[in-house]
Length: 318
Image 1 (cartoon, one colour):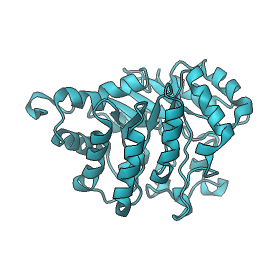
Image 2 (tube, rainbow, N blue to C red; image 1 turned 30 degrees about the horizontal axis):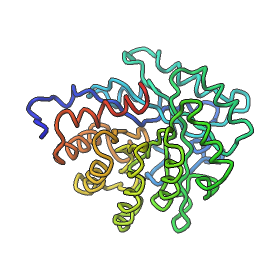
Image 3 (cartoon, rainbow, N blue to C red; image 1 turned 180 degrees about the horizontal axis):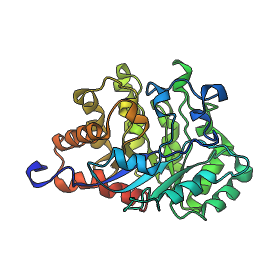
Protein backbone atom coordinates (compact mmCIF):
# COMPACT_ATOMS: atom_id res chain seq x y z
CA UNK A 1 0.00 0.00 0.00
CA UNK A 2 1.24 3.48 -0.85
CA UNK A 3 2.55 5.37 2.20
CA UNK A 4 1.83 9.07 1.69
CA UNK A 5 4.06 10.01 4.62
CA UNK A 6 7.11 8.91 2.64
CA UNK A 7 6.52 11.09 -0.41
CA UNK A 8 6.00 14.76 -1.25
CA UNK A 9 3.57 14.84 -4.19
CA UNK A 10 5.10 18.09 -5.43
CA UNK A 11 8.45 16.31 -5.80
CA UNK A 12 7.13 13.01 -7.11
CA UNK A 13 8.71 12.42 -10.58
CA UNK A 14 5.95 12.87 -13.13
CA UNK A 15 5.85 12.23 -16.87
CA UNK A 16 2.89 13.80 -18.60
CA UNK A 17 2.04 11.40 -21.42
CA UNK A 18 -0.51 13.64 -23.12
CA UNK A 19 -0.54 17.40 -23.53
CA UNK A 20 -0.71 19.86 -26.41
CA UNK A 21 1.28 22.89 -27.52
CA UNK A 22 0.37 25.25 -30.33
CA UNK A 23 1.20 28.59 -31.89
CA UNK A 24 -1.87 29.95 -33.64
CA UNK A 25 0.03 32.38 -35.86
CA UNK A 26 -1.20 31.83 -39.42
CA UNK A 27 -4.40 29.93 -38.55
CA UNK A 28 -2.82 26.58 -39.46
CA UNK A 29 -4.83 24.50 -36.98
CA UNK A 30 -8.31 24.02 -38.51
CA UNK A 31 -10.18 23.39 -35.26
CA UNK A 32 -8.49 26.33 -33.51
CA UNK A 33 -9.09 28.93 -36.20
CA UNK A 34 -11.32 31.86 -35.50
CA UNK A 35 -15.02 31.33 -36.11
CA UNK A 36 -14.76 33.67 -39.10
CA UNK A 37 -12.09 31.36 -40.57
CA UNK A 38 -14.23 28.25 -40.07
CA UNK A 39 -12.86 27.12 -36.71
CA UNK A 40 -14.88 25.26 -34.11
CA UNK A 41 -17.34 27.21 -32.03
CA UNK A 42 -17.79 24.48 -29.43
CA UNK A 43 -16.18 21.32 -28.11
CA UNK A 44 -17.20 18.40 -25.94
CA UNK A 45 -14.93 19.85 -23.25
CA UNK A 46 -16.97 23.05 -23.03
CA UNK A 47 -16.07 26.64 -23.87
CA UNK A 48 -13.56 26.14 -26.68
CA UNK A 49 -12.86 29.86 -26.94
CA UNK A 50 -10.92 29.59 -23.68
CA UNK A 51 -8.12 27.69 -25.42
CA UNK A 52 -8.12 29.47 -28.78
CA UNK A 53 -4.87 31.20 -27.96
CA UNK A 54 -1.20 30.33 -28.06
CA UNK A 55 -0.14 27.58 -25.69
CA UNK A 56 3.62 27.35 -25.71
CA UNK A 57 6.06 25.51 -23.49
CA UNK A 58 6.33 28.54 -21.21
CA UNK A 59 2.56 28.37 -20.65
CA UNK A 60 2.68 24.66 -19.88
CA UNK A 61 5.57 25.17 -17.47
CA UNK A 62 3.56 27.87 -15.69
CA UNK A 63 0.52 25.59 -15.34
CA UNK A 64 2.62 22.75 -13.96
CA UNK A 65 5.02 24.80 -11.83
CA UNK A 66 3.99 23.20 -8.55
CA UNK A 67 5.05 19.71 -9.62
CA UNK A 68 8.12 17.83 -10.75
CA UNK A 69 7.51 17.26 -14.47
CA UNK A 70 10.61 15.38 -15.61
CA UNK A 71 9.44 14.55 -19.14
CA UNK A 72 6.38 15.06 -21.32
CA UNK A 73 4.75 14.00 -24.58
CA UNK A 74 3.08 16.45 -26.95
CA UNK A 75 0.16 15.04 -28.94
CA UNK A 76 -0.47 16.90 -32.17
CA UNK A 77 -3.77 18.18 -33.48
CA UNK A 78 -4.36 18.36 -37.27
CA UNK A 79 -2.22 21.05 -38.89
CA UNK A 80 -2.52 22.56 -42.39
CA UNK A 81 0.12 24.73 -44.06
CA UNK A 82 0.74 24.19 -47.77
CA UNK A 83 3.82 26.41 -47.71
CA UNK A 84 5.46 24.57 -44.79
CA UNK A 85 3.86 21.18 -44.22
CA UNK A 86 6.13 20.32 -41.28
CA UNK A 87 6.26 23.77 -39.72
CA UNK A 88 4.58 22.71 -36.52
CA UNK A 89 7.01 19.82 -36.01
CA UNK A 90 9.96 22.17 -36.48
CA UNK A 91 8.42 24.59 -34.00
CA UNK A 92 7.83 21.80 -31.47
CA UNK A 93 11.45 20.67 -31.71
CA UNK A 94 12.49 24.27 -31.04
CA UNK A 95 10.27 24.42 -27.95
CA UNK A 96 12.59 21.94 -26.23
CA UNK A 97 15.31 24.61 -26.26
CA UNK A 98 13.22 27.47 -24.86
CA UNK A 99 14.52 29.34 -21.83
CA UNK A 100 13.69 27.92 -18.38
CA UNK A 101 12.84 24.55 -19.95
CA UNK A 102 15.43 22.62 -17.96
CA UNK A 103 14.01 19.19 -18.83
CA UNK A 104 13.75 20.00 -22.57
CA UNK A 105 9.99 19.39 -22.73
CA UNK A 106 8.34 17.97 -24.73
CA UNK A 107 10.66 14.99 -24.95
CA UNK A 108 8.32 13.06 -27.22
CA UNK A 109 6.07 14.14 -30.07
CA UNK A 110 3.06 12.21 -31.33
CA UNK A 111 2.59 13.62 -34.82
CA UNK A 112 -0.51 13.76 -36.99
CA UNK A 113 -0.97 11.67 -40.12
CA UNK A 114 -3.99 10.35 -41.98
CA UNK A 115 -3.06 6.71 -42.42
CA UNK A 116 -5.42 6.29 -45.37
CA UNK A 117 -3.31 8.67 -47.48
CA UNK A 118 -1.17 5.73 -48.47
CA UNK A 119 0.26 7.35 -51.63
CA UNK A 120 2.32 9.88 -49.70
CA UNK A 121 2.49 8.25 -46.28
CA UNK A 122 6.01 6.88 -46.72
CA UNK A 123 7.20 10.33 -47.75
CA UNK A 124 5.68 11.79 -44.59
CA UNK A 125 7.20 9.11 -42.38
CA UNK A 126 10.62 9.57 -44.01
CA UNK A 127 10.38 13.30 -43.28
CA UNK A 128 9.55 12.54 -39.66
CA UNK A 129 12.95 10.86 -39.32
CA UNK A 130 14.51 14.35 -39.34
CA UNK A 131 12.85 15.17 -36.02
CA UNK A 132 14.34 13.10 -33.20
CA UNK A 133 11.47 13.63 -30.75
CA UNK A 134 8.79 12.00 -32.90
CA UNK A 135 7.65 8.75 -31.36
CA UNK A 136 4.26 7.97 -32.84
CA UNK A 137 1.17 8.97 -34.78
CA UNK A 138 -2.30 10.04 -33.77
CA UNK A 139 -5.30 10.30 -36.05
CA UNK A 140 -8.50 11.03 -34.14
CA UNK A 141 -11.14 8.47 -35.14
CA UNK A 142 -14.06 9.41 -32.85
CA UNK A 143 -17.41 8.96 -34.58
CA UNK A 144 -20.91 9.06 -33.13
CA UNK A 145 -24.18 8.97 -35.06
CA UNK A 146 -26.50 9.58 -32.12
CA UNK A 147 -24.82 12.64 -30.59
CA UNK A 148 -24.37 16.27 -31.69
CA UNK A 149 -21.74 16.95 -34.35
CA UNK A 150 -19.17 18.13 -31.79
CA UNK A 151 -18.74 14.53 -30.62
CA UNK A 152 -17.50 13.42 -34.05
CA UNK A 153 -13.83 14.26 -34.65
CA UNK A 154 -13.13 12.63 -38.00
CA UNK A 155 -14.42 12.78 -41.57
CA UNK A 156 -15.57 9.16 -41.90
CA UNK A 157 -16.73 6.35 -39.65
CA UNK A 158 -14.97 3.34 -41.15
CA UNK A 159 -11.23 3.99 -40.99
CA UNK A 160 -10.62 1.00 -38.71
CA UNK A 161 -12.02 -1.35 -41.35
CA UNK A 162 -10.81 0.54 -44.44
CA UNK A 163 -8.20 -1.36 -46.49
CA UNK A 164 -6.09 1.70 -47.32
CA UNK A 165 -6.10 2.86 -43.71
CA UNK A 166 -5.06 -0.60 -42.48
CA UNK A 167 -2.31 -0.65 -45.09
CA UNK A 168 -1.10 2.67 -43.70
CA UNK A 169 -1.24 1.32 -40.16
CA UNK A 170 0.91 -1.62 -41.21
CA UNK A 171 3.77 0.81 -41.99
CA UNK A 172 4.05 1.97 -38.37
CA UNK A 173 6.10 -1.02 -37.29
CA UNK A 174 8.58 -0.49 -40.15
CA UNK A 175 9.12 3.13 -39.06
CA UNK A 176 9.16 2.30 -35.33
CA UNK A 177 6.13 4.46 -34.64
CA UNK A 178 3.40 3.84 -32.08
CA UNK A 179 -0.25 4.73 -32.62
CA UNK A 180 -2.34 6.87 -30.27
CA UNK A 181 -5.87 5.48 -30.48
CA UNK A 182 -8.67 7.98 -29.90
CA UNK A 183 -12.07 6.33 -30.30
CA UNK A 184 -15.38 5.69 -28.55
CA UNK A 185 -16.46 2.41 -27.02
CA UNK A 186 -18.46 1.09 -29.99
CA UNK A 187 -15.26 1.29 -32.08
CA UNK A 188 -13.18 -0.80 -29.69
CA UNK A 189 -13.86 -4.22 -31.20
CA UNK A 190 -12.49 -3.10 -34.57
CA UNK A 191 -9.48 -1.46 -32.85
CA UNK A 192 -8.74 -4.65 -30.93
CA UNK A 193 -8.66 -6.59 -34.20
CA UNK A 194 -6.10 -4.13 -35.61
CA UNK A 195 -3.94 -4.49 -32.49
CA UNK A 196 -4.17 -8.29 -32.73
CA UNK A 197 -3.24 -8.21 -36.41
CA UNK A 198 -0.15 -6.04 -35.77
CA UNK A 199 1.13 -7.14 -32.35
CA UNK A 200 4.54 -5.45 -32.73
CA UNK A 201 2.99 -1.99 -32.97
CA UNK A 202 2.33 -0.28 -29.67
CA UNK A 203 -1.20 1.15 -29.48
CA UNK A 204 -1.99 3.71 -26.77
CA UNK A 205 -5.64 4.30 -25.90
CA UNK A 206 -6.31 7.99 -25.30
CA UNK A 207 -8.42 9.37 -22.46
CA UNK A 208 -9.61 6.10 -20.88
CA UNK A 209 -11.49 5.30 -24.07
CA UNK A 210 -13.44 8.58 -23.90
CA UNK A 211 -16.47 7.50 -21.83
CA UNK A 212 -18.84 10.18 -23.07
CA UNK A 213 -22.04 8.99 -21.36
CA UNK A 214 -22.20 7.93 -17.70
CA UNK A 215 -25.43 6.03 -18.47
CA UNK A 216 -23.39 3.71 -20.70
CA UNK A 217 -20.82 2.82 -18.05
CA UNK A 218 -21.43 -0.94 -18.30
CA UNK A 219 -21.16 -0.87 -22.08
CA UNK A 220 -17.89 1.08 -21.79
CA UNK A 221 -16.54 -1.48 -19.32
CA UNK A 222 -17.39 -4.40 -21.59
CA UNK A 223 -15.75 -2.82 -24.64
CA UNK A 224 -12.69 -1.74 -22.66
CA UNK A 225 -12.20 -5.33 -21.51
CA UNK A 226 -11.94 -6.39 -25.17
CA UNK A 227 -9.17 -3.87 -25.81
CA UNK A 228 -7.29 -4.79 -22.65
CA UNK A 229 -6.96 -8.41 -23.84
CA UNK A 230 -4.39 -7.20 -26.37
CA UNK A 231 -1.03 -6.96 -24.61
CA UNK A 232 0.26 -4.30 -27.04
CA UNK A 233 -2.42 -1.80 -25.96
CA UNK A 234 -1.83 0.56 -23.05
CA UNK A 235 -4.19 3.15 -21.57
CA UNK A 236 -3.80 6.82 -20.74
CA UNK A 237 -5.47 7.97 -17.53
CA UNK A 238 -6.49 11.29 -19.03
CA UNK A 239 -9.26 13.36 -20.58
CA UNK A 240 -12.10 12.35 -18.28
CA UNK A 241 -13.10 15.90 -17.42
CA UNK A 242 -13.86 16.62 -21.08
CA UNK A 243 -17.17 14.85 -20.53
CA UNK A 244 -17.62 15.59 -16.84
CA UNK A 245 -17.53 19.37 -16.62
CA UNK A 246 -18.83 19.35 -13.04
CA UNK A 247 -16.59 16.49 -12.04
CA UNK A 248 -15.84 15.27 -8.55
CA UNK A 249 -13.37 12.77 -7.20
CA UNK A 250 -16.19 10.27 -6.77
CA UNK A 251 -17.43 10.73 -10.35
CA UNK A 252 -13.97 10.04 -11.81
CA UNK A 253 -13.03 7.21 -9.48
CA UNK A 254 -14.93 4.30 -11.14
CA UNK A 255 -13.31 4.99 -14.51
CA UNK A 256 -9.77 5.32 -13.20
CA UNK A 257 -10.04 2.28 -10.95
CA UNK A 258 -11.45 0.15 -13.76
CA UNK A 259 -8.66 1.16 -16.15
CA UNK A 260 -6.05 0.30 -13.53
CA UNK A 261 -7.78 -3.03 -12.88
CA UNK A 262 -8.07 -3.92 -16.57
CA UNK A 263 -4.71 -2.84 -17.93
CA UNK A 264 -2.71 -3.20 -14.73
CA UNK A 265 -0.14 -0.80 -13.38
CA UNK A 266 2.36 -1.63 -16.14
CA UNK A 267 0.05 -0.54 -18.97
CA UNK A 268 -1.44 2.72 -17.63
CA UNK A 269 0.07 6.20 -17.81
CA UNK A 270 -1.02 9.63 -16.61
CA UNK A 271 -1.78 12.43 -19.08
CA UNK A 272 -3.01 15.94 -18.31
CA UNK A 273 -4.61 16.69 -21.69
CA UNK A 274 -3.70 20.33 -21.14
CA UNK A 275 -4.73 22.87 -22.21
CA UNK A 276 -8.00 21.14 -23.24
CA UNK A 277 -8.67 19.88 -19.71
CA UNK A 278 -7.75 23.32 -18.44
CA UNK A 279 -11.28 24.33 -19.47
CA UNK A 280 -12.59 22.32 -16.52
CA UNK A 281 -9.69 22.03 -14.07
CA UNK A 282 -6.37 23.41 -12.93
CA UNK A 283 -3.38 21.12 -13.37
CA UNK A 284 -2.98 21.01 -9.59
CA UNK A 285 -6.52 19.77 -8.97
CA UNK A 286 -6.43 17.29 -11.82
CA UNK A 287 -3.12 15.70 -10.91
CA UNK A 288 -3.96 15.54 -7.20
CA UNK A 289 -7.30 13.80 -7.74
CA UNK A 290 -5.86 11.28 -10.22
CA UNK A 291 -2.98 10.64 -7.82
CA UNK A 292 -5.30 10.22 -4.83
CA UNK A 293 -7.62 7.82 -6.64
CA UNK A 294 -4.70 5.68 -7.79
CA UNK A 295 -3.25 5.69 -4.29
CA UNK A 296 -6.57 4.78 -2.67
CA UNK A 297 -7.04 1.90 -5.10
CA UNK A 298 -4.22 0.13 -3.27
CA UNK A 299 -1.19 0.81 -5.46
CA UNK A 300 2.26 0.47 -3.88
CA UNK A 301 4.81 3.26 -4.17
CA UNK A 302 6.54 1.34 -6.98
CA UNK A 303 3.24 0.93 -8.83
CA UNK A 304 2.49 4.64 -8.42
CA UNK A 305 5.85 5.43 -10.00
CA UNK A 306 5.01 3.10 -12.88
CA UNK A 307 1.68 4.79 -13.60
CA UNK A 308 2.82 8.38 -13.15
CA UNK A 309 6.33 8.13 -14.56
CA UNK A 310 7.98 4.92 -15.73
CA UNK A 311 5.32 3.55 -18.08
CA UNK A 312 5.19 6.66 -20.24
CA UNK A 313 8.97 6.61 -20.44
CA UNK A 314 8.87 3.04 -21.72
CA UNK A 315 5.85 3.42 -24.02
CA UNK A 316 7.26 6.47 -25.78
CA UNK A 317 10.95 5.51 -25.48
CA UNK A 318 11.83 8.79 -23.78
